[in-house]
Length: 572
Image (cartoon, rainbow, N blue to C red; front, top):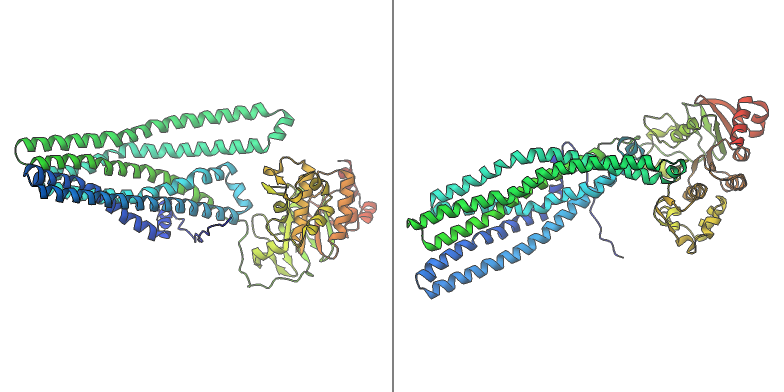
């Protein structure tokens, strides 16, 4: 299937939501400007229809001039054709601008998520992020859908007012001044609507977050019998969303009714004044019909302006949510490519905070009574986590290297394996090319995961469900290990890679991993005797610092603290 390339969205102005919306408009100024011009032509063509009808009545029907009637009938036909053509083109550009603004906002949001990395999940709930993609980006685009009609409404309103002013100054001033007064009355509705819509957006985001968390932990909830508790929490939050939605509905209904009531009052007022003028002989019959047509037409600009106000409020709220994601600072700066030469694979990794040194080309195991300590060391070795790191690679500070190159050459596989929807092949290769299926099979063999492949009738083309929920914890862990092995990095850091597998499977993984990664730098955080026995070097960490270094059997025989940790891990 052919894909349509979407242009690079660039770097937005993130100072305020309004500046972000203006920046978005500037990024598509050509289609936006063309849409504004077509909107003006479309509205003006419609606005001049009453004038043509009035002149046709006065110069054709009343005067008994057939030529005049034909002439103004043709003018009316021409205006209709112009309005139809300009309206169709305007609608096309309105949809174009709406979709481009929406998907540009979505693309910016996705890039912000990618750049923020793990810092985002610590700052903004996942449900809030989902709500931005599901609702807010489309609200931003909705503003640009109405922009062309809004411009046409303003221009046509001024033109109609000028025509009425030239024909009858009292009617002209009634139109030119009465419209803004009616629109000013909407401010009493707009401000409370904005506050209540913002509150509704907050409560909806919390509900989405709660639902996403409940679905993600459904298996655990069933295991501990906590389904009813979370169901009650979800029902309570749903009631909050319903209550705030009812409050929004009251103000929204007032705005929607104002879109009908205020223009209707305006039409009645203009028509009544025009009828009085016609009875007094101050305007002709054709002018009376034209004035009624103008009054009826003016309902369209007035309703368009109120719609624009409503869209602007929604877009402002949506832009504020998008900017909230873009404002999240990543844990690590990207660095400057080429500023510091990347070290050779023979360089050692050193973490000054703990004193751990990972020898190049060796399998190093980190063990601690507190797994979070070794996990923190693993993060620092891969330049993950908040704050500046003093970790060095081959003597070069890791923080001064290009983050993109560090990610390519140092892979950290976390303890919590995450799988996404797609084919098994895509999950394992993660967008990287493979020499052949044999390469994938070999990695599955090392991770002792061929049984997972055999269970799929379609093999590598079998579908992985969302979050890999059809697999057990051990199967997901082995597939995540396979994915890390296929990345084939210079430095591979594995955090508790076998914590969810049985002892027999763990023994096979330990032996095969040591063989597959021989001569390449590999770090494993674990308390498993099987993995520790396969390591070239074992580092015992106590209170976040190195307490002992040596071979597994030597430490087991001569270090009581190490023996306690390993024996406890074996018992677990």
